[in-house]
Length: 111
Image 1: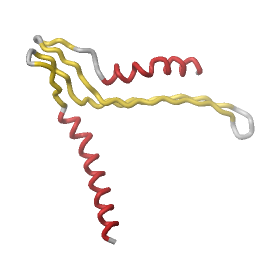
Image 2 (image 1 turned 90 degrees about the vertical axis):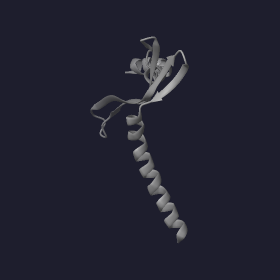
Image 3 (image 1 turned 135 degrees about the horizontal axis):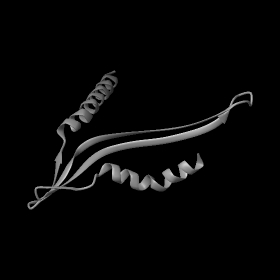
Image 4 (image 1 turned 180 degrees about the vertical axis):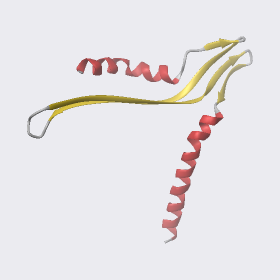
């Protein structure tokens, strides 16, 4: 188990950048570099039972990637083209939570 943690620690810095920006692809003279919002986490542990018998070990991990858009490099220059479906999927819950919070703040200030 300790060896896995050391390997993950060594690769953690590069992992985030490589998962957020994919390799550049060339199509019809234009270069495309996909961009994503990524979140990942890992954990592990071990322990003994309350009476000192038995032991347990465990580990786990997760990852989420939301495609935000693509950087396009053409003759005109570099430009970011967003993925509107992903942006809406992220923005709608954010706007809803913000609206609910503002409504509660306004209601509290009126009292």
